[in-house]
Image (cartoon, rainbow, N blue to C red; front, top):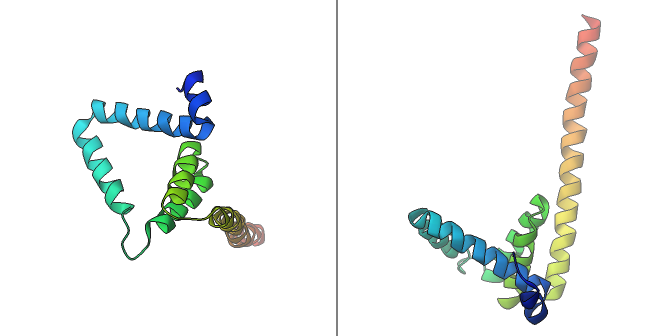
Length: 126
């Protein structure tokens, strides 16, 4: 966990990102081969290809918000800004993520609950 000196010099977000990186470093020491391969894989995934790097971080930001991963939210928001995303794009990512979360609840609820009700009614008739 970060100390008060980190918080004073860097702020909460940067201290949290450093805490995350420290945790990843610990993991890599515990399982060097897996850690090395994981880092190579994620690095390749976030390298610009047909999708520009800032957009990849915005996608990861939306996913991190959906699973409520605080470290990844801060890491990918920071990385998105550092690679060229705008503050407005971060805010719009929040909106898309909120719409998706609400849409997922609505689509699953509206379809699956109907199925439960249909089956429940068919059991009553039999």
